[in-house]
Image 1 (spheres, rainbow, N blue to C red):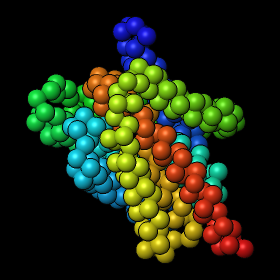
Image 2 (image 1 turned 180 degrees about the vertical axis):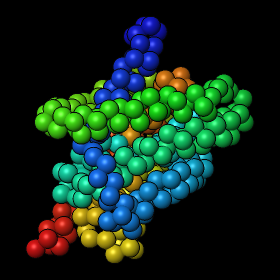
Image 3 (image 1 turned 90 degrees about the vertical axis):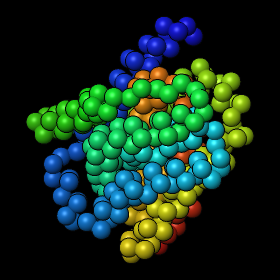
Length: 295
């Protein structure tokens, strides 16, 4: 693909695709849904704290433990500071988890990380990359916040407005956009892999174990957290999926569009595949416990 084609995908297709995903989430939300914070404060608080505190530390720790090269370690860290995505909601639905909890956690983390992601990136980029002597991408914290507001908060708000005033239209659109969100995810990962195939293959052995470890530990932490707070099996599985299945489309937007560095996307491409595989295995393994609890 030509440089112009790659630039078009990075600056047009990826942002529009991400906005569609967030709009589809808004179509399923109403203000009353956030009442789950009051109804299930322990569950929502646990999932929320995990995203804001535990996941970034896990991403940082795994990169250091496996001694990843700076670009790969930063790419892994970017995944860990991103919110959950609509893919986690779909997987929770398939696994008969607590969909309402999943949607609220995804929405809350998507809103709050608008502010935490730029701040964490402003520290992480020079910390990871300056020692290697390579190019250090410039990042404007206010500018990045505005970009994230435009592609996450505003589409969610627009979807909620449609849901509030035209519920029938919102239901039809949500039905159509739900699979579109998954197609966009696969399309963005597929494009990124295609234009960086050499880098992906060259680094697969080096970064693969670290990626798998991060996803496994994240999902395992979600299950243990559910057990520690006495959650029902379906809630514990939901916390696990919400912890391990990140918004990879947003991560790729940050690396391809905001930072313009293809090398940072290598870990995210692989993580996108690993998280869906592991979540699917969790659903198959956990379904017996959910059925037994419901009996």
